[in-house]
Image 1 (spheres, rainbow, N blue to C red):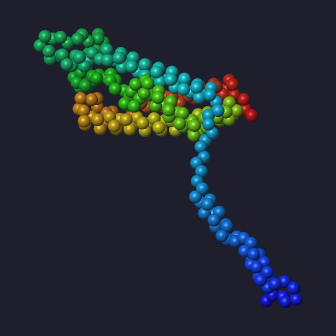
Image 2: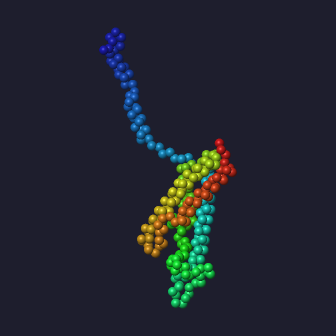
Image 3: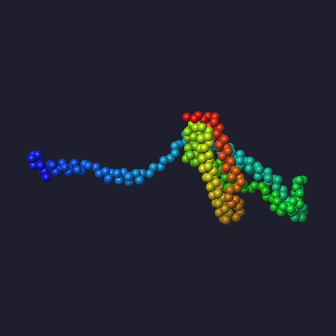
Length: 244
């Protein structure tokens, strides 16, 4: 009911009252809209970029030297055992009418072949020691270095706080975490390549047979890399590290 004694028109009083009522914020509506916006506001937070190029370069160099030495030594070992595998040649040529069997070593007793079976010491050299994905030195180096870089990026292995600005035990913990992820990726890669090679065996029967899993050479190469990386990271932190 407008006040007739105020001297103001009734329309002016009604309009002012309406504007004042519309200026009151709706708390419930604004809160619900903010909640809905927060629910659909997804942000992908990536780890910080690598900060220590010396540690990163040292890791790659250590893996490079380790990979090529490992494959070279295994190749030399396989070649040496193949040359010493005279028993296989003896078994093949024993029934030769011309008796062209090779001469066995002095210490070898041919009667042992009958005692332990015809497969004793036969085919004891390694022809295909590695999984297909890491059979060559180049493939193995690319695989393990890529796995190490990916795992190290997410574990923070290339940050200054985990390389030089920490004590040696903490640096070893970060190295172990990164290596565990790397080892898992390498095992999966080796098994996947072996499985894929087994599928190719069905298409091309002349290809080498699949290993059916990890070989001893695969396990030695993957798991012995921890020794090389831990030694390098430990020496790097011990010689140049400074704890803040």
